[in-house]
Image (tube, rainbow, N blue to C red):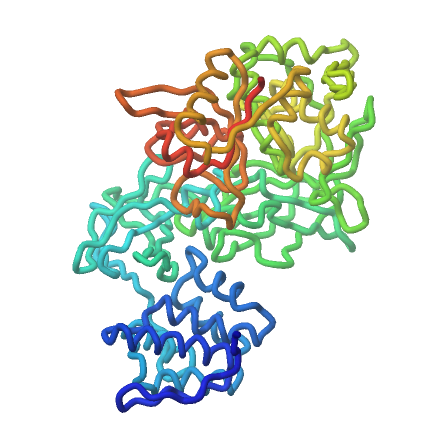
Amino acid sequence: MCDNSAPSPKFAGSSAMPTISDSKLATLYASFERQQRSNPSLKLGDAQAMQILAEIGDRSGWTASKTLAELNKPGVSREAKIELAKKGLTSNEKKDLEAILDSRTVPLEPSAKSFLEAVVGRTAAPVNGLQISGDQINGLTGKTKAGASIEAINLSASPTGRYHTDDTFTIGKADAQGNFTGAKLTGDMTMREGDIIRMRARYADGTTSDWIDVKANTAETKDSRNAEVALFRIGLKAGANGTIDVENINASRQISEPGAKLQFTNARTGEKQVVTLDKEGSFPAGVKLKGQAGDSFSIASSDGVNNTDFRTAVGNVAVPGGGSTGDLIKDPALHKDELNADGTPKFGKKTFTGPLFVDGVKASDAQQGQIGDCYFPAAVAAMAHMDPELIQKMIKANGDGTYTVTFKDRDWATGRAKDVNIKVDGDLYARSYGGPLYGSSSNSGDTAKMELWFPLLEKAYAQWKGSYDAIGNGGHAGDVFEEFTGGTSRSVDTSAGDDRVWNAITRAIDAKKPVAAGTHEDGGPVNYTNTGVYGDHAYSVLGYETQGSEKYVILRNPWGESEPAGNGANDGVFKLKLGEFRKLYDNVMYLN
């Protein structure tokens, strides 16, 4: 029989168990006391402190398991955990924690004690556990906890890539005294004079310090890198009373470096307005420009050192509206995220007239855009790599500004696949700077030069399925293999073991069959921090290789960039040891 009532006070030596009003917390503490009786040297550490806080967290509407998961989430700093624990803390819960702190029944480790004391307000929250000292001419130098890893991202170099501001790289490790020296970012993150470097320390238990931003001091004599601007993330919308609403269409990524100033100059009126970005390198809430639908703005940037007179512009953006592309064929509707509240599009369209193919069909041509259909470009790039002729045969220019794409629709009752012909024109939804909103090709974003085969395949696929929203909320690469070829696909979970996964990949690649792989979902069993691989994402498998006894899988990110460090050019192509591949990826899909 189970008794869930609060236990009566007990004694261990001369120390009484604290009086705890919360029955679940009392039961938990009683279990600690039993463990201490069998192990007199037992002390409660940080892990047990998290359990204690999780039990009182359910009073604020969360279950204990949910509270514990939030407290133990990778990347959450100690300071943030304290603030989380304080939320909804009642007077009785505070008394329970104070009773545990004042009891000598089961001793607390100093770290756990200081944590609980900060929660009840007896001491201030611990100061940030990372300090940077001296100059950075030979790399970043500082102090943190012994053995901690140092993580960083260059916020001055990252805006035009696909990095989030917490997509860090491990650049060093503290020694036994907590000191580190010579920590450097390399590759396209290489530090230059005046760059803003965001850093944190990651401790052995998985928790982190708070972020700190450092302005780099390098061997360069002056700051020569002006604030870079991600024009493709700037969204403009004609509002009321002659105003234009300005937004970051990728809110989790940067427009430019923190604190950068952007000057918008209206080409029609000549009026200039300067906007200062926030600490995340994005637009503050409520930014508006003066203008109307169809207006074009040139943008100049300054980091406060370079281009302070805004003389040099970085590009132009335009407000949707004020004209029409004159559709030859009605286009598939936008994804719901790109629609205004009234259902109207946030983006206009441009007519692209470039060639279907430039130097044939290549995996590197296909680039994912502003839509969650990674499975589609991953599958298409895999087929382009293995069978480029298949792609060339699927799409035909009709000579009148329209194109016909032929997919396959399998009748599972008969096993036969029939042709499905979808007709589209060259109109594509465009970002404010002029490039495609969704899929694009790597050779150019110019309306007269961009290679069209991939964005038109994606458009035709959306047309067939009903809208961009219908294809932009996840899917399976195996389905795309079947709908392009009429064949059947198979999959294998990476948990099946080295031999089975390796055999599936090598046999498919040797047979010139397309292969793709999917990672685990975000928040799932794998922490993707600092791996260069992204959760809930699909990748093309381009090949394999062996080096002695080591086996490698060669992959491509459909973004056309962003990959693990040390894999050469940032083109999205990289290789992983088979064991690491199986750890980071959930499944492999291939054409049978």
